[in-house]
Length: 367
Image (cartoon, rainbow, N blue to C red; front, side, top):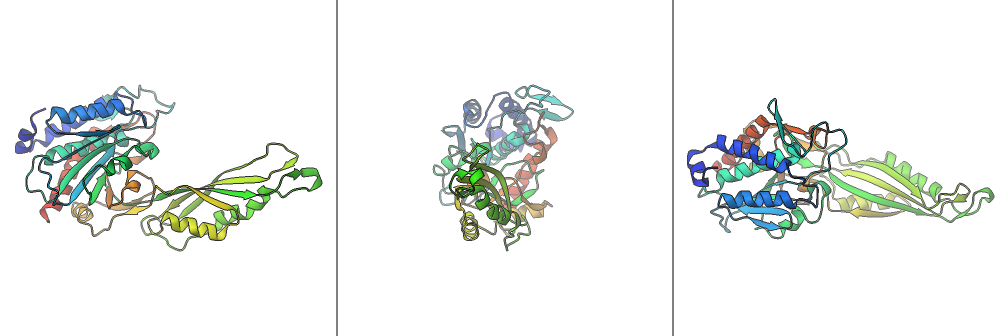
């Protein structure tokens, strides 16, 4: 690859696009399951080192800042992840052998979210040496996104300069996800008393929890989002402490999956549930929060000016762990994520790079 300065001076986006596809193929060839991303982390670190860009590494997270970083300016984060899920059994191709055919690159992680990551890296390279940018640019290739792990973006944020807003690269067909559902998982436990089923002894915990199941099924939260719709609750698991047919269970536990719109905090949801059910309610986590970025934000307005649509996303991402406004946007299609024979179109990556650059340039020029 040509030196950064030559790239910038010639605005050779075509070369950036080609290098992005080549980097994607290298990443695909290396297994990078969540918590096992050390090989792809090394490739990414080496990628920046070879181009004279100082990169930082914390566990399997890699980050870098633009050449003329100025602490007095606000900072923009460009983030996507390099971990993958494990391949499902439906693969007809080797998931770690990048294969190009009919304008597509096949391989595990190609669509989710390798195409996004290499497109954001190309965008970072495009702006890397530019002077007088109104914003600093911070690029993070993070780990453990697929499991919302604590050694991913959440770990890195404390090491970064102060971030004002960001772009999270996930496959959205380059449309703008300005809101994202949060995820709340509750354990709901009813306590009864064990007894012999034949003698009507004890207090059946399963029966005690039935009214709560009905409440989860029928309750409607007041606030409905124009982007994300209603809060949705689903009882997804039930178990008791008893496996014998002739003993009344003394404990019955539900698992409840709640998808939260941006109009509620997770703590508010927990409080409302606790007010209405008789059983004990314990949240497993309140980390994966619903998020939104204002339509009036300069980043969103820049996208609208480019003719981009915006929507609310039902899927979660590292966006949920960021305490600042973020736009989720990237090449590829969410419907392909985690599917057998995963792929991304090369022209999706090429167009993604151009769109990211146009998005930022339009925003920069309005400053």
